[in-house]
Length: 301
Image (cartoon, rainbow, N blue to C red; front, side):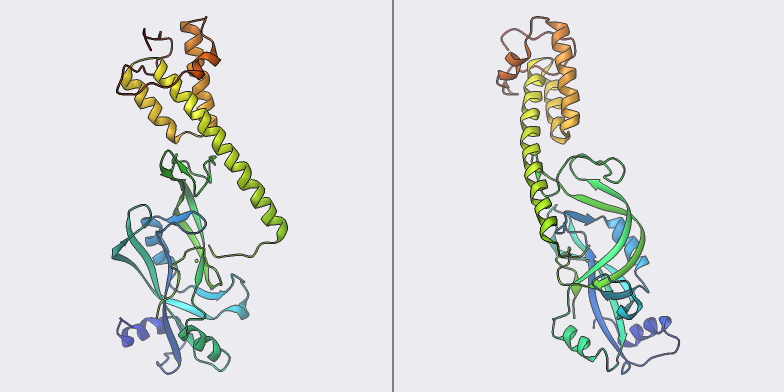
């Protein structure tokens, strides 16, 4: 191990009733979590990693998130947030991870487990914690307080949708699992995977199909609203408002479209909605017009 074993042993013995020697304990390192987007479409913020670093010291390790006393197998006695200078996340941030030192007492009953850890069989781990904020990368909404309709893993106007986990307020345990949510989590010298039944899998597939259909309808609605933005008003205003639609969900787009149509009808009672929606959006570099409630369309647009 990188750290001096005598120093690690002193830190370890802070959690024991008597001092143990290196012959009595088995020490190993593991990565608990990181700031990369995981299989669930989530990632931890830097502040969350810092808080997890403090809270995971002394936390016990179990198997498959089964919180029973006979399932306890190891305990963390030291943590550290580290940065890999040669790696970046999918979002372009420096890759950071929470490393931990753990120990277990050498006994006849866990001899096989120790051999499996050394052989890389028991490796993947998953963490269990509570967070106070889940921030959508597309619209910035806190999904815990005001859930939005953006689907994790999909792109909206080039922006990948994922959730940033922040404001950690509790940690429960860490577990050896078969499939961790965070791909890099595991023993180095999760959020973990769960098995689903056929009915659950069927519901997930149906939800995915519905979400895909909603995405298509939302994209079509966004195009309609952008056409209206460029049909009425000043150029700079049109572009600013059109750009803002990238981060709007279906409900916000409907409200904006209704507002635009209200302005159109007030400015020109003869204007017909279907005709407006069929018109192609002009190029921003040309004589485009922006959103202006009550404004009249310019000639030739």
